[in-house]
Image 1 (cartoon, rainbow, N blue to C red):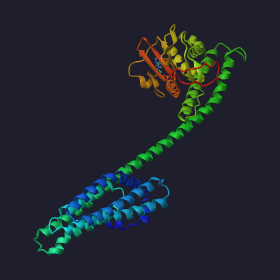
Image 2: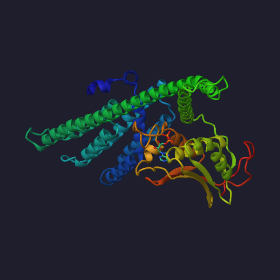
Image 3: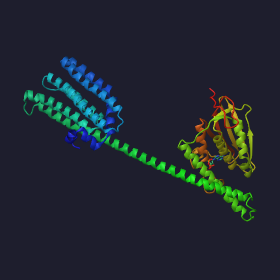
Image 4: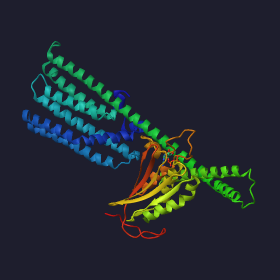
Length: 469
Ligand code: ADP
């Protein structure tokens, strides 16, 4: 857009061609932000001018400038309530910006020209320098809307030329006179001001386009994530039902309830049942992850005894542990504590920590569930004497689909989701999950919660408890 095109574009056309609501908002936001800075500069200039020039005309010009600032302030509050979508309001705001610019630039120009008129011929340093400062200020801060900026600079340009021509008109000097030199210097400065305005505008446009690109990328990534989430949720749901019936059938066959199973078939059926269960675990983990991500996992909080939680978890995993030749022990706390928790979800967390401890222990080992209470906190730990975890593996331990040893030769199975889900569940309870470990010696995974006061729930009912202060 050329200088003249920009100036002649009416707000309606400008608006419909560019539709840049964001630019209007940016313009007004910055303009409001700088209002006191501008005011301070105007006041300082007015005091200076009133001292050296005719005070009454200075006060009049200053009042004119303040009036335009008040209009800007009022416009700022209108724009703040604009949602950026109603184009009619946008056009009205643009018109008001145009009128305010016209008033404010004219006021500043009259202010400067008035000073120059009162000066005797030669060296209008003060008014020219004030205009120059106002122009640079505008170029720096009003570059969001090139049309508006050029309108302001155009008015300042007329004031610049008027001041420069004043002496030429007064003196009608010879071409070799310094008055002409001053005139041409002003033309040069005007060119410089136009150039830096264009540069500032280009900078703003580039930043604006970059922001738009980032926004578009973000929207695309979000849409892709939503599709992936829906896809995973659908597939998981569709897999769960047939898997449940496959597992049920295999258990019936394995339990000889459908007749005696020939010996040569038993190993194959056992492997099929184990793999079907692993698949079902993965599907459950995926569904849990989706639920937590979508904020759809409901936590039914009740007072729970930590000792009871530890006993239940140890008992429920005992069968699994015996398959690995592992014994699970409990070390309860004499001073039982209560926490506010969702029993089912907390058992899920405990099961995850325990099954890991069992999986990564050597046959014949012991896994201990320990309860400790200190101050307002209570901690349940799972100790094992297994292979341990190397330093710096925390991200893999709690990451999603990540494992410390994800190689093909790893001995134990798993999805790499269990601890990630456990962490999300514990955090939803306002608790903390962490571990300490020594390679080749063993690991301790623990969860920690605030203690509660009140009576424990024996089952799922019962009152919600207040936190220990
Ligand atoms: P997985 O399904 O693989 O067990 P988890 O999220 O439960 O997934 O655990 C992530 C990884 O953390 C495991 O694959 C393992 O490498 C490591 N890990 C967890 N618990 C232990 C433990 N008690 N001993 C050694 N490594 C462990």
